[in-house]
Image (cartoon, rainbow, N blue to C red; front, side, top):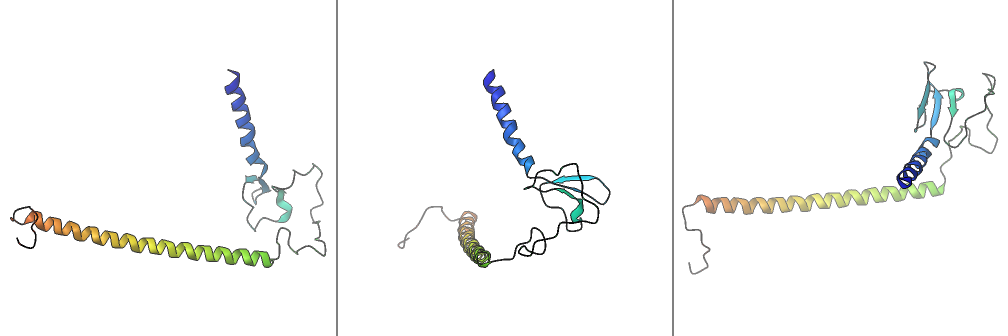
Length: 143
């Protein structure tokens, strides 16, 4: 009896890890919204309560007009990074992989079309042989 209870407890603990990567923000109607995707760009920065990588803020809130200023070395918008050479290389590799996958898919479709055409031709020949009143035995060159 202890084993299923322990299993259920461990499973419940593991399933709760997904809740740690949640966004929380206040929408235009003043309701709290919880999601695993980022809020839309129409939500002001001051309405974002929690991000996945940050713990929930303390009960103390900042004044309404004050937002943290980015440091000189950081990108101008929070969470936006400038693409580097590694990003360009990865995007090029992804583009090549997508093109190769499209070419493979096209080749598979062409092969499938060829097989369908061959199967259709054999089916037509079989139907013609069954519809004729000739004897259904194979014949060779001598008859």
